[in-house]
Image 1 (tube, rainbow, N blue to C red):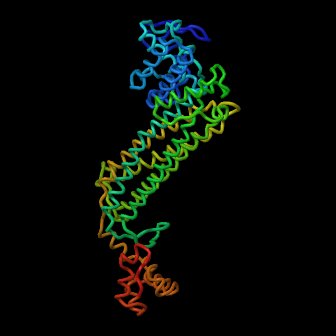
Image 2: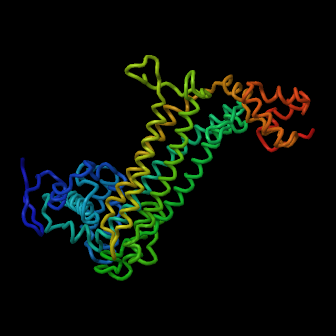
Image 3: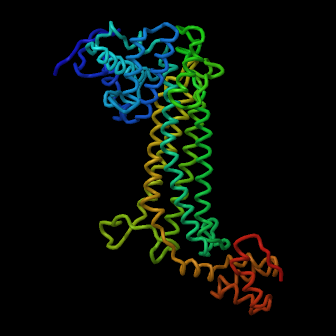
Length: 467
């Protein structure tokens, strides 16, 4: 293999001649082989890093710290990355020591070598354009990396929100389709009071809609960035006014409403916005998992369970039991949710582990948030297309559950009293007779009155019925 020799603090090393990355990237790739997931797994992060570098180059050019030739070459290289080119050159594992320095240097070296090629020079000819002195000018990993993370997470959220919105809309469609089907509601897995299957699915849709709003709010917190703070937030090695100008340029490039943090020292060490965002994803994961549990329960059977809905069959369910079909799609959503919940704990611990002016565990935080977004996006698309859209209702079973339920006695309490209602419920349970039959037999209400009180119009909303 053809190689080129590069030099850093630790000495010389041979780098593949055609590689756009350099010596520091190669060392990091050799040091960190933890997840097997390279930076290239998250194109949103590479795009964000390139935007940060482009904004810095233009600011440095405007402040006479970079020549126009170098700034143009850096920006052109960044545009290639933003458009999705050369992402395979980001080879460092996402989990790494050094607070993200390896990721930052991977970006610096790739951008430098793309720029050198555009200028007509050899890769690795850093005397002409240097990864640190030029691409990383007026920056530190400690401001460039978290700023890119703030942007990358927003880009990932932009991709995720439509999937979540589409799932919500699919649930709304089912709510409308099932709006006429009366069934029993349940609390603590026991009969409660009647509702419609449509109301049940509408509740699923509403709870997801709430978290779409929360994700937007969490993205707003990520718009306050520490770019320009450099090493610890003091702005060392930047000219006066650089922080404000570079964030303005980054906001223009990214089309995100970014602003400089009010206190760059605080913003450099604080991981609060990431913790908040991760917490929202955990909250959403819990809701999706609970909904998946409900779908599994409602479809249980087919002969000995609740059997109120049918999930579309996706695959044979057993290697030994013929005819068995399992609720594999909700089960996969459950497992996705568990991973997201676990990832939130990792983010929490990593954020707490920060010391003094920096949090060295940022790579763990960024990896887990981006990975949770990626998993949830795929899982929501799976749940919608392979489960929700194909759900059908068993109307006869739903009606039979209502007819035979003891829970409907609740609708009669205001008219026959709690004591009578409790006695009748107990009698119905032990005799097998229906609540309706016992009430009529004891002349507590007429058949006409019972029919009115137990009608869907009376039981499914605040009562307007007077006897």
